[in-house]
Image (cartoon, rainbow, N blue to C red; front, side):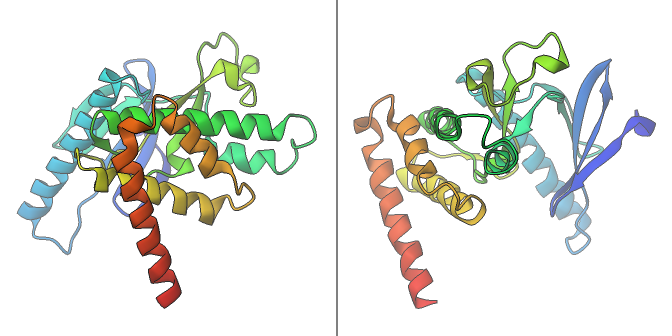
Length: 239
């Protein structure tokens, strides 16, 4: 398997590879050692973060939030092996594409709104189960086909044939407090503003999906989000 690993990207905390595991397309997330930490402390922190991420993925499955399937958790090599959606596209790339070469071929507002509602519904299911993602960005959201017999059938702009999958739970944790859920929404809003300012209404459309199951049940979370939002704006104004 070692020879089969192909590096896809490297972040501040981990390297991500693709390979084949037991004949299946696989993504491997490997957390590398931080040399500035004592080796024993680093091993302890890394093991706990791997455990939390694996638990988060399993918890998502239990509450109906689509994520890659877990294949293997290897603490000794600091790795998580999980399903690789070979036919998928990130929401970030979808929104960028909608504003570029494909914008004249499809109904841009309809696609962006429906994708946004899918995002809101997924985040609501997370929060209803007291899960905080911690890094809600459009890079950590994939559109994957519900059914696929042929690669040519994958049409990312046909949202009726797609599901939203959340990925990268490295910063996730379990918390029932409305404050944490409000911060989760604020992180998403700031990510959208910085990356997708061509879509001024997209966060409001996401909130349509978030409140679709009922707004009263998340009233405290929405109130906390407004508080966090106000604090953020104040810091921006003050500098």
